[in-house]
Length: 261
Image (tube, rainbow, N blue to C red; front, side, top):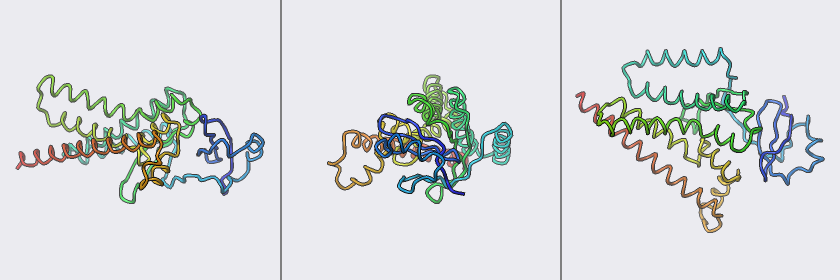
C-alpha cells in the first residue's frame, strides 16, 4: 500500500511537518512547498524528493490491554531473574523512564501513544515509547515530553546520591540505582544518536539538520556554525560523562563479585 499525505502543518519557523496515512510524520523545509502545494499534495503519494526517515522497528498502540501485557512481562522477568539485582534495577529504571514519557504525553493531552520494539545498530535490543501526535504540540510541550524520561532517571540518581552521602548509608542497591539511572540519563542525553537528547537539542536550537551538517563537516570544523560547534562539544561532554558512569558501575559490580568470593 502506498504511503500518502494525510496532512501538512506548521512545525517551527523553518520547518513544516507532513503527516502520512500511517500516522507517521517527517519534517521539510518551509521553502520546499508553496501554499498551493500544501493543498494539492493531500491524499497524494508522498513525493520521492522528500527525504523521509523510515522506522524499521515494530510498534503496537498503547492501550489498557497492551499496558497490562507489558507490565506482566516485566513482573515475570523480575521473578525469573530475582537473584540478579543489576538486571531488575535496569529493567524497572527503563520501564519507569518510558512511563515518564507516557504520563507526560497524557498530561499535555497527546494520546496517540505507541510502544516500539526493535534492534538498534545491529546488536542493541530496545523498547521505547513513540507519540505520533507530539509534533502537533507546542515547542515547550515537545521539549517537556522528550526530556521526561531523562529527568526521571537523573532525579532518581540525585535522590539516591543524597540519601547515600547525607546519611552515610553504604547500601549496594541504592548505589546501583544511583549509578544505573545516572548512566541511563547521560546516555539518553547523547545527541549523536536518535536519543531523547537528540530530540531535545533539535527543539532547543530549531535546527533539525545539525547532525547531518556535523557529519558532512567532520573534517573541516571551521565550517560549522556556533550551534554546530556547541552541538559537538555537548556531544563529547555527554559521551565522556556516560563513559565515566559506566566505569563506576563496572567497578561497583567487580567489588561486589570480589566480596561474594
